[in-house]
Length: 400
Image 1: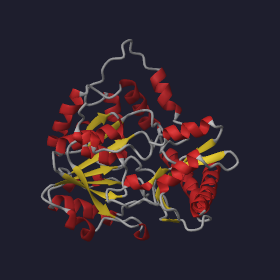
Image 2: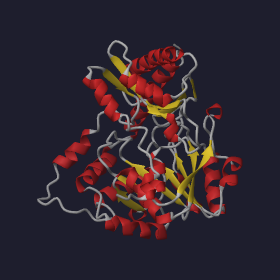
Image 3: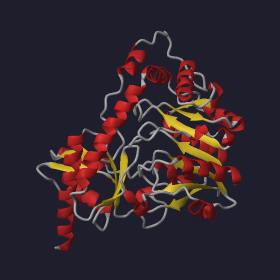
Image 4: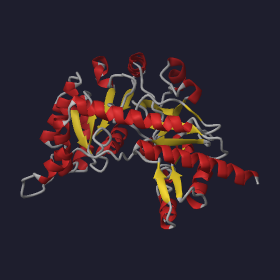
């Protein structure tokens, strides 16, 4: 059978592809610590479940393609509370942040186009872009410079006649980089000067540490035609199974094209939007402050334990709940197979996301991993301790 060359150019997710090996390890009675996936263990606020349980309609009908009115209004009011002037017409409900990205790329990309993306990046960006016939043109970064990328010297030489957009994640997945006001302004200016879209994935907006203030590219009203925001309830409300997100843009032509796809796929899930609306309506500044404090505590636990492993290198994350780590091994993917298939420490092992899949540049990331610090601090400490023992055993085996 013949398959699409576009889908054949895509790879499996480095975050999820080791699932069968994890299941085999568990079948052998091992405890597997999960550092691989951004699935928080923080309880989803009960307001979501209350709203769904109290839904009184006798028919679970299609939602309007733009979104359920109460959800659009709740999302609008959330952005207004942050100081960003948007209307419900600027918001399109999507099936999570993933569909928001897919819709945007379908609207702006065609065969041979390029999107500038700082690497390392969220691997699913590559899949979403490749299936349009476009490709990622990476903006290289280095851990020694804290993975920072927002300079003219790093970006402008990579703009070509086929460049259509710059895609950023702020706060960053997988690096934890948080853009400064000056860096955000520069990205906006470059997008305007070169007539590019600036797509800003902001699903981790509230998770910034060290007293920083949550931000958005929506603040730049002079770039309204260039900016599109991707957002989701998954991370800020620990509701990853509720596949509800948004596209936010004041570009009316872009939103008009996005509506064609929204109508084609009919609607985002009605009940999930009802629950998501309740989350936005009920959460207070104290909720977000508590969330930040908990993730900062978890980050600090991981950092403290990583510092005990000889030869490990990493940049201190400023936001989100991930960090990239360079390990003293020849190949982080081979190490992952070893940890799941051969290694245990008192019946325990660990799972992470190997770093090579977070890069477009061949050969980069081979000794790197992404850690998601989304479980309780004591579990994270033990997971990193097990990782350290696993590295020691792996290297010893390779030397023998």
